[in-house]
Image (cartoon, rainbow, N blue to C red; front, side, top):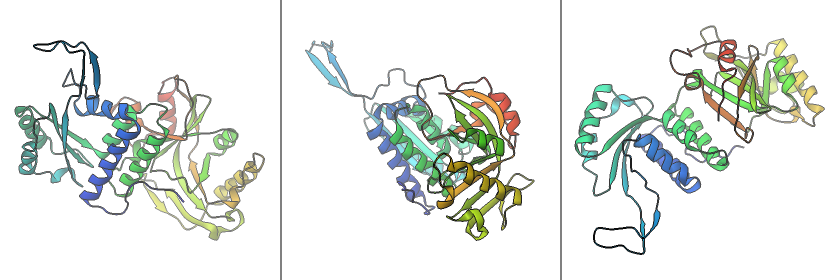
Amino acid sequence: MQTHYFQRYHQEENVATANTMLLLSQLYHLAPNSFYRVIGEKIFNSQIDNFNPQISFILQKKERNSVPDAVIEQQSFKLVVETKMNGQKFEKKQLLNHLNAFGDAQHEVLVTIAPEEMDARLKKEIDDEAAAKGASHWNVTFENLAAAIEDALDERSDVMREWLEDYRDYCYEDKLINDSWKQMRVVACGNTFEFNKENGVYYRNSTRGYHPHDYLGLYQNKSVRAIGRIVAIIEGEPGHKDDDSKFVMIKERKSDGSFEEQNKIAPERKQIIKNAIENGKQYGYDLNAQDMTYFFVDSFYETDYRKPTSGGLWGTRYFDLKASLGGNDEFKPGESAESVAGKLKGKTWF
């Protein structure tokens, strides 16, 4: 059973706020440098050239009337956070009152968080009011907040990545993020790489959760080597090899791109599952004895999306294809996996 760090199934603003504050708290404790990077680069957005909230130790710093042997100092900042379950529900009066909550901090920011960006006119009004008070306003979606934290993490932050992944799962479950159309999950493949690629399937233990994604990438030897677009997801309980009643959920992609639940398995997919079970035995895997999830793609298309930095892929990683491919002009909803594979070929990621 998967362990969750964040509350589930409570679609209320106070729960969303509490979960987000817990995430930021863990970021501060587990990866403080990344925490300050998010604060400095994302929240202040380089508006403050000398922003450095980390504690500093300075020898022989010249003050106005003296030169002490040493100075220990830290800049102060204050973030006032307002969370909404709908980006159109922000109220100008409430936000202006929040701007009056600032005290004597050197750097002050009003942070507004929702599933989508707030109305552009209201955002400009709040931006201007904040600037007039010497403060800043950062309007961010839950999706972009998670992305900002991921960008700030280094490769050694394995525990923090687990927290971030569970936070994203929570956001998907409570419909705070809905972007599966542009998400690619990259998974490390070892012995079964060729089988996965040739049969258009990837499988994993069902207790290892995942959040919605339309594309699947197979990683091996420092690169994403193949990409497919998911067309079906099948879950099976122990003993599912020869017993259809052991399949507990089947999802099939419809012609409009959405998924619908089905009650039976196409014979060719059932055969691929049987073949996967047999193939896994030679590597010591007993798929038939576990709760398994099988992800079927239309086809895996070869690519070479490289990781040039040291270290391999730890677990799984999600990529925002819209961001990876350069924005609106390079990636469209429903784009074919063949097209994505071609566009990513030769590019790098870190």
